[in-house]
Image (cartoon, rainbow, N blue to C red; front, top):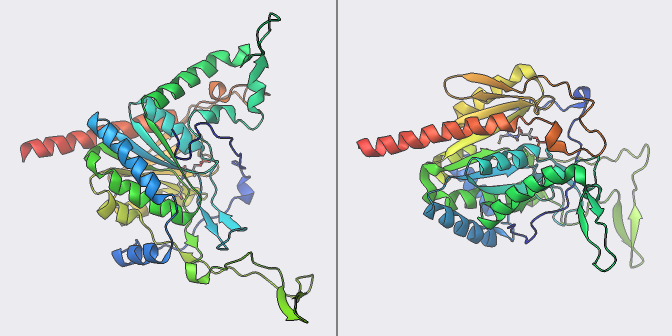
Length: 386
Ligand code: 9Z3
């Protein structure tokens, strides 16, 4: 099911709820949308990821299959992109995202009858397996040894208290797998993300308005251009040759005054290219993440104006799991989970996460699906009348 051959991966948890006072203010300078020449120059000067061809081929097969069933296909992007500081990368800058939004939304899209291409940060949360990677649980906590009658071999089963939920998740997962409804494609860097996004958009073209882009990945605004990137691990001091040996000189130490200054360029804003030339017939939904509530709707409107796509879903870092705002060309409206009083139940030592935590994606995805349906209907009506 996944391009790397694994179906359920071991997941890596990241800190997903930083304290408000420590949250980063992302009131970054505004960048202009990428022009065709920026696109050419970015893709000409950065190397494509080695998996590009293989992923494109797999995606093409996936799209053809679902095209032949007249099925809607959504590309969900999820997780954060990295910005490598070295070509042989030891250090990188990361973007905040555990992949919860993307992985959870993907499940709701599957439930709504979509086929899902899940373009995700490697080792971030995945649809279905996310239920078993709760931070207070190891997946082994869900299992127990079945009693044996002495003759039979040892068997492992789900613990009684988890079995009902697990079987429901397992059935959905197996259905998606059997019907080839979920394609998992991993990325790590901002460059591989952009190459893959472009390639997938082009492969999705035959779907016309039946394709949907749901861009939940947290995408870096800045990167180190190829020509300024160090080849090897950046050293804290310098090496000089002395008597035929490399000797460490000028080490960093208190008072040495040595600093590492990282000079980043803005990543061209490719949303415009997606809307205008990579996927002009698709519905495109982007997410906007802010930390300052006064800026959120303003920034959503700016994005809509600049890229002329269909919908921006705004969220604040601090409240992203309980409320989002849908902003389109006409209006904005909030979707909110009803207030919960389940703190005692939540995270209660090994409980099954999905049972206790209502998910805002259960509100977001049906509304996106409804809007996508309306767009498809309009396209069909326009084609009939012309
Ligand atoms: C989001 O805003 C997502 O909802 C989150 C989800 C990253 C907050 P988690 O994965 O978090 O559930 O932990 N994604 C979009 C962020 C982004 O980088 N948007 C770009 C921007 O704001 C536009 S594509 O400029």
